[in-house]
Length: 474
View 1 (cartoon, rainbow, N blue to C red):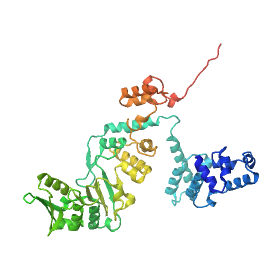
View 2 (view 1 turned 90 degrees about the vertical axis):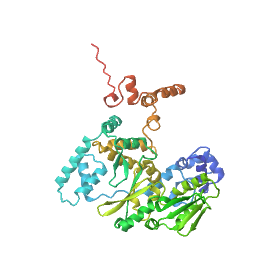
View 3 (view 1 turned 120 degrees about the vertical axis):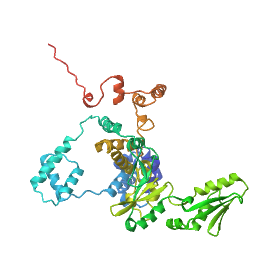
View 4 (view 1 turned 45 degrees about the vertical axis):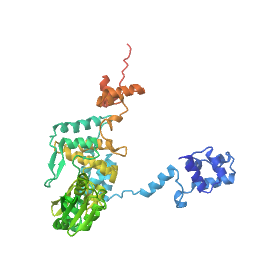
């Protein structure tokens, strides 16, 4: 912990500035001071009574001290957090039975597997022998699928994903069960995923509805109009009056009523646009926008600004189409704005999905982005064949283990490898080698690509073992 934080923590406990200076001349952390005895503090020139008082103050638990105080030591903060989030799993009778079998038979099963097995066989009326047979079979399957030490998991994952990837068709779009809503699929989508594109070529969202909106088509359509961006051309027609240098907006009452828009909504929205500000007025059933100067160029600018004016909806969502799944309605969108869509009334915010991975990382966090990477990769590759989910999980972990989503490429993971030869083997070979030579970089030949380049065994699998045999001299 920083010296300043330690000083503030000591002063907060009522220790004099003089004694604080003496303590910090030898110790850097609160833990080091509390571990020291009274005799060690006396050696710093602190009287024995004051030294004993300091030790007693530091030995008290942080939770019994004042509610508001400066940041404590790293060790104390970790202890408090552990106490707050500690929620041990309470084993059911079936789980205890499986764990007892594992202990008696010396079997190894992950806790998640134990919980999954217990949830499936609970209340099935199985005998002890049947539960034991299931547990032994699960342990056997788990052991058979365990990776060996120094296994080339990265190479295997690359092979597993790359082989069906080369067989995928180049068809860019398919219908997502709704007319005229296109979503990128196949190889282009796989490339988008591993490149961690900020904006997918066809961003889309699946928006489940709740309550009456999920059951009533009219209510669901109303929710879709709250999400879909409504421009002026969606609810009105535009006429240019060149003689009087003005633009006439003729609203369509039926379309305005469908989308819940009034004349005042259109008037207020148009007045917020910089080019149109102060030029808009309502005349009868029409809205007139008069040019403030006799210029055809200015009239064209007014027309362009008016026709693209957003009247209602969420930015980034160009279309929102209803789709029925079973007896419930949901919305499929073109465009994505996860943060704002989750706020719309009638939307099931906990189940909204988007195909924009980086947007999920920004809104919901890196763990949600990792899950989306796995799901999108699995769904995309499922059309070309079955890929073990662990290979896709390995790629997702590699792309997100730093707390943000990285691409697999020279601007991401491959470009950050410590090995010069590995970076040069991927792309732009000459610049990598030239840059490394200028900076005096050293390649320790620890990875796969660099060892293959120089023609020596890779330090994985059997190559990770060095065996030296010295024969006896006769």
